Image (cartoon, rainbow, N blue to C red; front, side, top):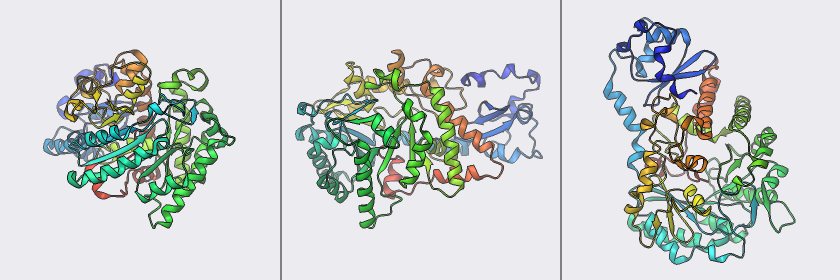
Length: 517
């Protein structure tokens, strides 16, 4: 594995006596393939070196006349004249999200759903189960509770089941939060994560008129989407409904005079085994639909996916092989003038190429469970994240941290379970993670570890998430290193640029809504 490489400097081919630690700044290192090494530090800086240059660096041979000196010195990889204040300032900026508090409130309006997705994580119930609907009384307590966050920005994200089945609760939360926020004076967004199959004209127009962001799932061409996301009780497939309502919303945004690059339906794609064989058609569909951001996501070991894994699952190595092919194809399209980016890559690139961390709650240290997000179950139960709610739905109450009726906001975020999750996800204190070159860009998911091994900490290098994050970072670094004309870097830099709908929201949160969908 790559994680221990930073500990094996004494086994380098270079004789130990020629290593000059006094010449070296603070960095981790590792192999990224083809004999190349990468250096990284806590400020997010990185440098790829061939083996000869790396050996020269360790031997203290990068003097002021060396062609790499200026670059390595500016990034803090050389000890001579190291500006510790500047390095500390960069690290403070990278970690400033830690002082923001909870900025994402996941609200489960109902567990009822009219679809039977093969990988469903949400512990859905049948459409007649109105007992799994959130009540207006509970919804009021949820809004009151969530607005207690010290964060100047808050996004309410409505999920299910299919959240629009209980549309009255969405309407109530949006309107009540708007009224309540007159006194809180926060920047508040609302986002609904919907399968689009329960949408109608009245609901769509209300969401448009009230500025609610819309995110859906589009798993690929009709055969792929309808295979992954079956629609019970319908003669037509779910794909047709998704396309119809995506077109409606996007057309109406233009009619309302809104910038279509900022106002559009976001779409997510979850890769099953079927998807792996159709990755190019999936990317082509997104391009054809004018969708400029495709999130290629692997399956998670939750909910119904655990029961259907033999049919829909795969090894992480299989996913990464396909992901690499898709990434190269997306880069090729960009070189041809097609504006589309891969969303997960964009998150990692923001960590690599910008001075800020995007504060994506699932890929940060510590993880955002209970500190960057809270999840409110349909009955008012509190969870550190939506995954915690999913585990609860599978019969394990470990991650239930209270109820909105009797658990204060402070008690929720300071709950022993939240604190334990934080301790289990601080990379600087985890064996092997603390010396791993990918630490500045990575994030541990303790709930995934728990689901796979019964241990929040897990054995990190053997986990699929470690393999996934290491694979993503290595691919991005390789494509920047194998880039003689600089086109890949130019494209990647473009992917890191955010044009916020509301500049105040970005300044307050450094977060993309619907990130937990």
